[in-house]
Amino acid sequence: MIKIKNLVFSYSSKPVLDDVSLHAKKGEILCLLGPNGSGKTTLLKCLLGIHKETHGDIVIHDKNIHTYDYKGLAKKVSYVPQKQMSSFPYSVLDMVVMGRTCHLKTLASPKKKDYDIAKSSLDYLGMKDFVHRPFTELSGGESQLVMIARALTQESQCIVLDEPTAHLDYRNELVILEAIRMLLDKGHTIFMATHYPNHAYYFENHGLDTKVAFLNDGKIQFMGKPSDVLTEENLEQIYQIESKVLRHDQLKHVVPLYTKGSKS
Image 1 (cartoon, rainbow, N blue to C red):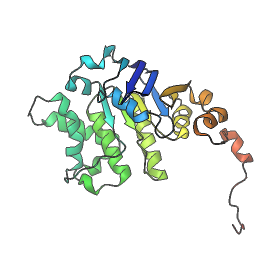
Image 2 (spheres, rainbow, N blue to C red):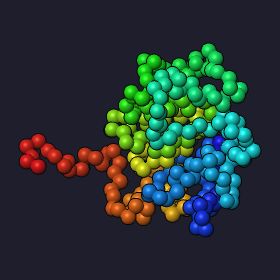
Image 3 (spheres, one colour):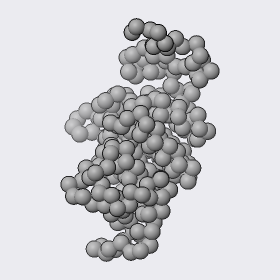
Image 4 (cartoon, helix red, strand yellow):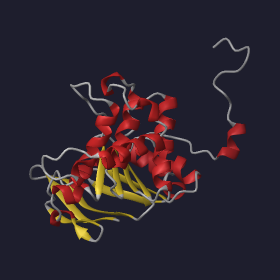
């Protein structure tokens, strides 16, 4: 569904992305990990056609992305940003139905069919009671679910997410991960940038086709299944920190930081 081959991109003389090759098939999630400044967001912007690569190819549905017009590309790939700001109090339904823009003629208004698709997307994500709520009054987790519903309403097979759980509390992080799992169950291809290795484990542990790619200094350092790639050695090499990777059956051996009766 998504193929990136030998991608090079530069803002100036030094490449920000250097010979990057990735692919994600239908129903698979690719979790893009890497330190701040490693090129993750730049890679996503290239994938969305916002940046034009210096060298290489980006292919979606067996066609180079630059052979699509804007509406054509939007029918193939949708985008969920870290955070969506709105200066106007659009209703949740109005925000979601904006995902139908690529299916409408220029200056045309959404029809009943478009609103029905938007309502169905909200219902699928458990948001049907939010239809008439102002988007500006939603919490961070609620607004991210609305953005995912908009991507679903766009009816594109591929969905790109840029750190979708950034700034969310623990509960809403899990809510968003579950929403992404539901998209995978529907056969979508997901390309997700994240700072949390546990996100990749979450999808793999649910039996979903999951791939991890470590981006560092503009290059792919490691790529493969989370259980193969997310090793203590690789994490230390990428982030320069010592970590411990534990299986769930090892957790009983971990000494808790706080126990009953402790004074700390």
